[in-house]
Image 1: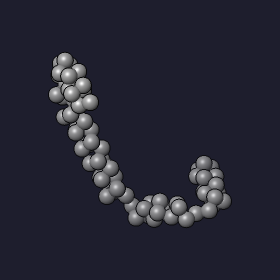
Image 2: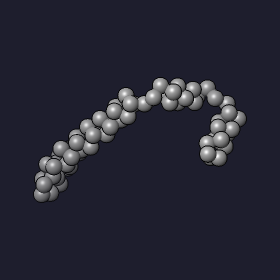
Image 3: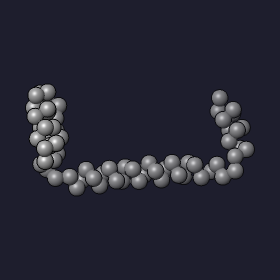
Image 4: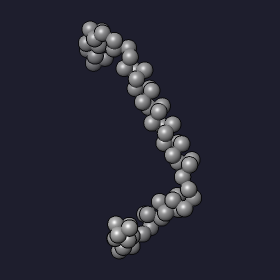
Amino acid sequence: MLRFIKHHLTGIDGVSIYPIFSLLIFFIFFTVMITYVIRMKRKEVDELSNIPFESNEEKSEKSIVISKK
């Protein structure tokens, strides 16, 4: 299987840029996510951490309040 892929990739000009581009996207994505998480306010973290424990009624009431603002 790998020989089949290597054979077809050797015919593509500039194929060596794809691994570098993929690594760059991976690095930028995780850098942005880590920065976002570090900069989150404690109140927002507490709200997000309580989401699994809320009942369906509480969720619908909060969504109504949020949509009215």
